Length: 247
Image 1 (cartoon, rainbow, N blue to C red):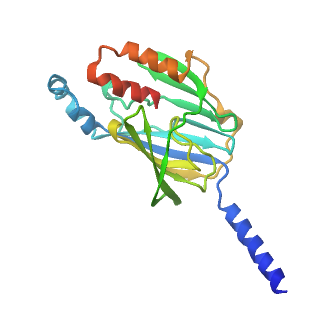
Image 2 (cartoon, rainbow, N blue to C red; image 1 turned 180 degrees about the horizontal axis):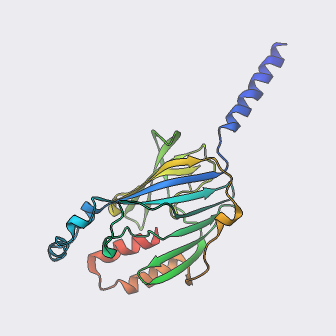
């Protein structure tokens, strides 16, 4: 009798544990760019020019993105409008029109990226970062999350908090590769953070996972080469423009 009770208890605990995993749904991310720090990094001539528009630029440029997910695929795309998005074109939040479709089973990604007047359709394998998982824990949108630190372009650090309770290994933009969903992401050198503000337990429709086929087709390696050729005369600002496009 005791063995039966023990087995039943173990089975119930296992079922309860499985029930805690979120298999599909929709996450809203708030993307925040610290415009004050962006302006502080300008040279003196640019700062003088920007003084004429400083009152029209909020301290933070805020945009919203939605990520629909299932165990096999995700799509990240622009969400609702924000009241804190600068109206001036040169102060717009970078990468504000990006759409990223990720096939988790095949390990492939397709991304629509607008770079000034040129649209690119990037098709490649999922990016692999060398993540270092730490012991730091925090709660984000009621999900227990663990901190991980990665690096791209040899010197650009990425800080992520992911949850194992959402099994899809994905996150904002083209970031993935952790044992669960990225709920918060920060790139200090780009003065930018993404944080999950809301998780909806809804079943995404197949039509949610659509992406335009318009744009110049390329892959990550060729896109970086194109950008480096385009920004070769931009001096110290070239790298950040490339990083913004490649995220």
